[in-house]
Length: 146
Image (cartoon, rainbow, N blue to C red):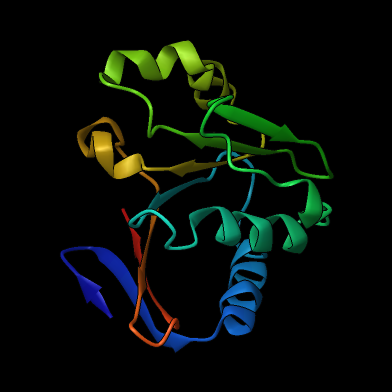
């Protein structure tokens, strides 16, 4: 589906196993310089999604931890995965203190950003991944390329 030049994909009612498998397959379409912008409530599965991406990139998913307090984790592999969390930031200018400026400028590796929607206007481009949890615990995922 396309809307205004954006490609949109929606997956519904994914079990946790299918959600992780989807994230793993999703990663195979990523390349150096790609930015994955994650949106979802607390507990929606943003970090879980990054674990699936890591697995798809050949990185041990067990090392993936939420960077809520460290603000950014780096997972080296054939392609480096940078994993940032903006939840604790108050102002878009703080994004540069996290070290994202260098990652964005170099375009080396893949950047996954949790709570990217807190500063939605900051991102000129990226792949938006919105995760919603249903009452039965399954997840709906909406992918939007900008």
